[in-house]
Length: 100
Image (tube, rainbow, N blue to C red):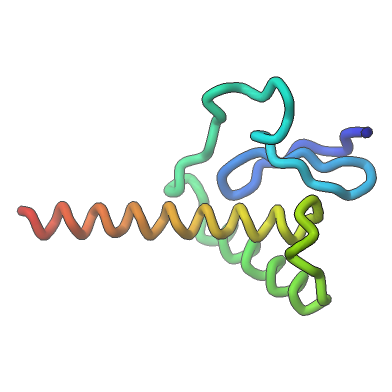
């Protein structure tokens, strides 16, 4: 395996291999514990929109998300985790406002 690039995703680092496979940091032996994730509020609106456009483009090209070491799976997982955390954070703020 030859490492081509280390890239921050919406939340965590991905390791892109020469053959195009994408390995998330948590699957790399010897990765830091606990893993470093970006905070949801560190992701810009522009970055999120670019991510969504890439996902739409990949889906339109017929990429299969079931191929787990391919870019579409990696991008989809990052986006799903980001969306979950964003809505979880929004829900927490709503609950705090209701309690006041």
